[in-house]
Image (cartoon, rainbow, N blue to C red; front, side, top):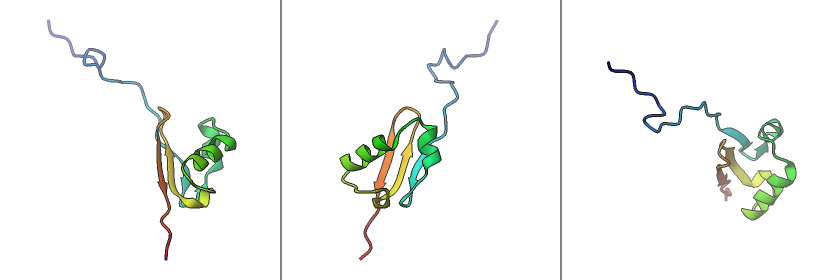
Amino acid sequence: QYQPVTPKELSIKSETEDYPIVIIEDGILLNKNLDYIGKKRRWLDNYLTDNKCSSCKDVFAMIYYNDNEIYFEKRTKKE
């Protein structure tokens, strides 16, 4: 008899993945979200420095994904 195919048999990851977590939105740090992902302010400051930003105000968006991936976009300066 035939049986349904399982995600494992198709090599599909079936674990529930967390939603992306917004860390900085339009220059505003969301401290609770930083705590939620288990990162410290020093980690964030180092990340900003590595990306040539002096503060959160220089960032349009920073989004953390559960696999340690980060979407990062600097704010554009208005002239």
